[in-house]
Image 1 (cartoon, rainbow, N blue to C red):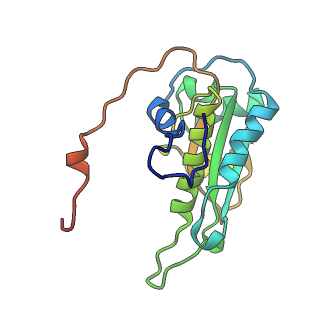
Image 2 (image 1 turned 60 degrees about the horizontal axis):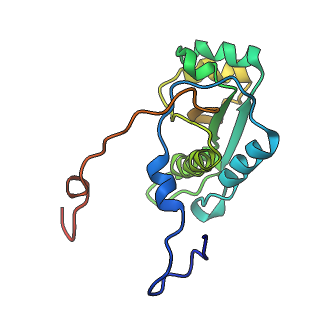
Length: 183
């Protein structure tokens, strides 16, 4: 049963979110099945509504589904499971449109990271797999996809139905990652 995210009183039911974040895995094998447009639309819409600094929304998502174009992506990240997925999402940020702090910090990368996280969790909720990729040849990718020079490609993810059950993941204990009051 889903409840309002604002109902946190005594006895409030937990939302499905806790299960969702514990289900998400990095998938490195995809079935060739196409992603239905309504499913893809819900995933992209979840990314669209992600928060960005000062609501500037300085991002663009490029959806690559054509087989010939995906095959060319092996020039930027040579893992067959990556470009063989039925879709690849290219997360781009426009730094000139992003909010900037007085000390010069530009929020474009953070904004795009939040957008991609929304996309990845929505994909998981739809039964799709993803894998955050940030080790790629950005210059070559921009050439292949015609991305303008002033746009930064921050992250990629293949998108598709997992070919197999994902392996369990491990995370450090909370005590190693959280400090209180002082470093």
